[in-house]
Every structure is written in structure tokens, then in C-alpha cells.
Length: 135
Image 1 (spheres, one colour):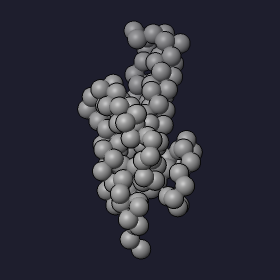
Image 2: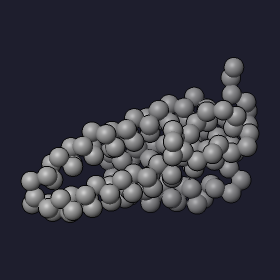
Image 3: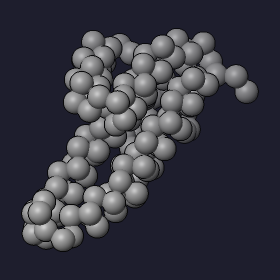
Image 4: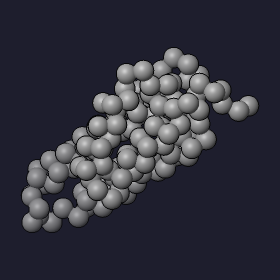
């Protein structure tokens, strides 16, 4: 069943949000987050359900990515600092499990945005706005 006209109305913002989420994770950390925040600030009021869903998910996902990075850095410091023997164990574990999962979820979210479909992150995703239906 094709998405409704109301859902495809926010497809451009949804794709931009998912793209900026991936830019934040892969190309330009920080800059991508600031641009995502600016997009969220500009489009948050009165955004169509598709755009609102993807904006909420990418902002939430970016905040979780930052929290996980802070936790990984804290764990490195607790285990002897950056000169300690356990630093690579934490770094490789973080990138293998946390970062790669966030990137995969972002790629999946981008594919959903390109298809004009709403979706939410598993476990930590924000509730879908009214009018979005099921993920």
C-alpha cells in the first residue's frame, strides 16, 4: 500500500534528517549534529508526521550516540587512561557493537525515509507522532 499524501509531504525533511544523522556519525561529528539541531529547530513546529518522526528519531539517536561515546571514554579512563593496556579493548568493543549498530540503524532509517515510511529506533526510539501509523 503506498504511503498517503500527508506522509510523503515531509519526505524531504525526513531524508535530510537521516542524512545529517549519518553525517554526524561517519563524516563530520559535531558539525552534522549542529546541522541536525538546526533542521530540527526550523522544522519541529508543524512538521508533517513523516518529518516529525524522522526528526525525533535522529535527534534521539544522536544524543544516544553521544552518551555511549562519553560512557566509552569514561570506561577507558577508569581502566587506566589512554596509555593503559585496556584502551584498545574498549575502543574496538565500542566501535564493533555500539557505533556500527547506530550506523546500521541510521542507514535503515534513511531507507525508510526515502520510501516515505515512518519508523522508530528499537528500544530507545521516541514514540511515533499521530498520523504515522506503525513503524
